Image (cartoon, rainbow over the protein chains, first blue to last red):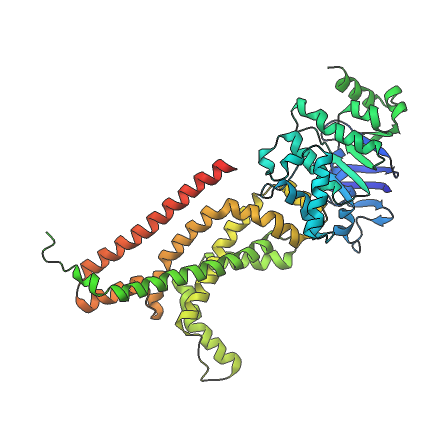
Length: 242
Length: 229
C-alpha cells in the first residue's frame, strides 16, 4: 500500500534522510522508533507530502507522492494523519473540526458530516464533548478527537507522528487504546512512537532509525528477540530499562 | 478667562462639522476595508515561495512605506489623470476626482502597512495547523480561508484597529486635494468666522476623545482575547 523507495532529503546542506526504503502492506501496522533527531517524523511526513524530499520515490497505492502531476490534496485526503501536538483547529468546536474535511474535501452534506462526526465521537468515547472547543479538553481528549477527525475521511491508511509524546502519563493509555482498537480492526498504520508496549501488542514490523537511516526493519518478534544492530540494542536498553 | 471667546461658533457650525466627521469616518472605513483586503493578498504573495509573487509584493510594500502619505495622495490626484491622458490620447480625459483619488491613495498606502501586520499574523499561526489542514486534503486556498486566516485575524484584531485609528487621524490630509473632512470643516469655519482658537481646540478635543476611547476599547479587547485563549 505504501512503498518508500530510497528516499533522501536535505535541509540545505544537512542531510536528514539517507536512502530510506521500506513498505507498509495493507492491514499492516508498522512502528517506527529511534532516538530524537533520527528523522522518523520527517520520514512519516514525506509519506503524505507534508515534507518534500529530493531523491527517491514514495508510492501510495501506486501513486507517486512527489510527482508534479499528482493531485496531492486528493491523495492526502485518503491518508489520515495524527500529530504530536494534536493540531485541532482552536477556532472551531469539536464537531466542526471533524466535519470540515468531510464537507470541503469529500463534499458531504453538512448533516451527513455531523452524523458521521457524532458517530466517531461516540466511538472514541467523547460524544458529550461534541460542542466544546479544543481548548476546553484535556490533551488525551484532544488527541482522540484528532483521531476521529482523521477517521472521518475514511482513510485507507493512518499515519501517527508521536501521538502520545505530548501527553501527560495518565492520558497516554486512553489514546493508545483507541489505536490498538484500530489496529485490531485491520487498519493500515504507520506509527512513530516510543511506546514499545504498543509495538509489542499490535505491531507487525518495527523499523529502527538513527541519523536519518533505517538501521533495522524487522518483524516484531525478531526485533524484540534479537535486534541485529548495536545501535538498536543500545536504544532498546535505554528506553526499556529506566 | 474665556470671556473673549465665542464657543457658540461651534454650535452654529455643527451641521457642517458633522458632515465633515461623517466624511472622515466613511473614508477611514472604506480605506480600512480596502487596505485589509489588498493587504491580505499582498501578505500571501510575500509569504509565497514563488519569486514572481513575493518580489513584486515586497517591492510594493517597501516602496509605499518609504513615501510620505501626502505624496501618494498627490500622485493619484495629479499624476494619474496625466497618465490617463497619455494612455488614451484623449486630451480632455478627466481624472478620477478628488474623492476617488484620496480613497485609492489611502487604500494603497494602508495596504502596505496592513500587509506587514497580516504577514506577521499569518506567521503567528503554528506550522502544524497548516500541516493538519493539508493532511485532511484541503487545498492551499481552503487551508488559508478556513484554518489560517481566521486564527491570524483573531490574533491581529487589536493591531488592525490601532492602525485604523492612525488612519483616521491621517485622513485629515485630504484637505490638500480640496476635500472637506472633519478637520477641513473645522478649519474652514475657523477661517471664515475668525475663531481659530475655539475651532482648533474643539477639533483637538474631538480627535482626542475619539481616538482615546477607541484605543481604550482596543486595549480592553486585547485583555479579553488574551484571557480566553
